[in-house]
Image (tube, rainbow, N blue to C red; front, side):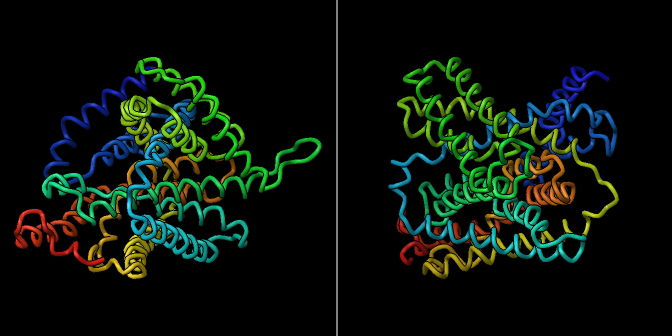
Length: 411
């Protein structure tokens, strides 16, 4: 079956799955949109139906690289400095502590586990362990927009979750990007190969130079079509260069997104273009990620299961510790980290990025753990977030007196 026919089948199948079957399931069982596309990719892939063969998946690697780069640019565009300085610093402090603790705990725990399960030395175990830590750090709280609309205002918990999501994404991308720079395969070049520090500098420089150059090209352009062409060119060039050098496309393109949104007068149009293309590329990424999964001999089963448990415990514990250190437990609640259990597209992007790395250690274990985590959290995260947020909403309603909220007076 030709790649063109396969692509048409994928598009038709994705449309039917999204608008016929899974739309009803999402409303009925509070399933976050995205899990259906990942499951569809698994069903179409070589491990189940075989409609998408391994060679076809590999042929669409450039599209997957573009999707990775686009996700990075979308995340970078969130960091508009004038808007960030208006956010209380305590929210960033809590979010940063939570993100770093989650990354460290999951990386350390999974590193120790991988050393026990597989014949690896400590240096070899670092790459898959930190990759799993980066996947675990990514979060996408569910149900926040709905509760925010009901409240009619931005309460401290809703605002903290929004800040935490952005910081989690930045920490996850930065950790994974630096990891691929530090632990980089030594190429056979003359007179010498770049050092680990130089690879990190190269990764950062790709984003900085790319952002500066395309800032000049974009100028004050406000035509959506022309902006799309320019942005697509910037992301394709940057993500392609990073992938060619065996670096993560996510980190350079996140830098590009941040540079463009902070230095261009047409930042609103740039964010509009990024948002328009994000969902189609995200769904395509989910489908191809599902199709790329290979069950293999089942060596992933135990590490993936333990990863799910470790991530949940680390997220909830790190969120509580961050709030406790900052004295914000009364305002946020001891269990506010449960609303961060959802993962979304970034976790899939990091897992797929690791899967695409040539000769990556335990690639299928890391990739499978990431996919299973996204599937599970998409199934339960909306209900968990609902359980966390609705009791607080009921307390607000009982509190009366207009907009005053009893739980916002502390912290």
